[in-house]
Length: 286
Ligand code: ZN
Image (cartoon, rainbow, N blue to C red; front, side, top):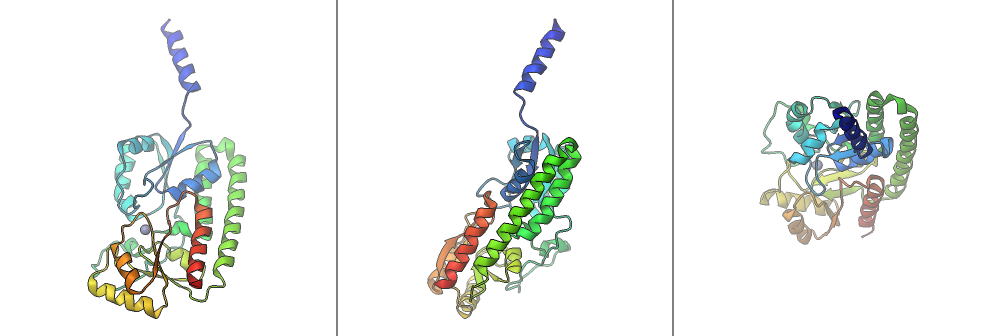
């Protein structure tokens, strides 16, 4: 009797079973992983939409989802590193994968450094925003593919086909971005939070940051930035919703320049990059 009862519980729970879970740190990674696994997994994202990935705090529900995840795909960012020991303690059966493996990192742009404190952690000076260059995303996609076939090898062909399709998409996006950005006369653009270092490097642009070492600039620094903006003929200051930017508004009246919001953490990754490139191109025509 008990056995019949248990069997029926298993039967019904498997009928209504949720899909297996994967975890990622940021929304663009959700896009990348979904391109490869399609709907075979649910994806748990640790940094909620609209929050900064550089100072996030996971909710209990996210920790639970992490515990249920087959894989955690790390993006290699400082605040993620601060959490990772806790994550590993909480999710003993989860495989932790570094999606930055083989991604060539560049230094964070240096800008008005006079009161910089030195840290022993060299990584702190490397730019963590590796997800905004389609060519680097190809490396991340390969890392994701390699990890997923380890936990679900029977669907290897399915994942391989999806992976190839995604590489084609990345090539198309890269080509389109190049076409949009190639004709620009002024290749310097100004952003509040310097997320676009890899993007700038790829498309031969120069990113100027308003933030100084992750903080709003002090009045003297603000004057320097205004001078630099005028010299560089800046007509737009790009902000993003994840970072409050009082100084961007102050700057925009002084330069003068428009303030335009762009999103380094959009889930709609391909379309968002194209949209961003068009905004930068539009600024060039102002
Ligand atoms: Zn950032």
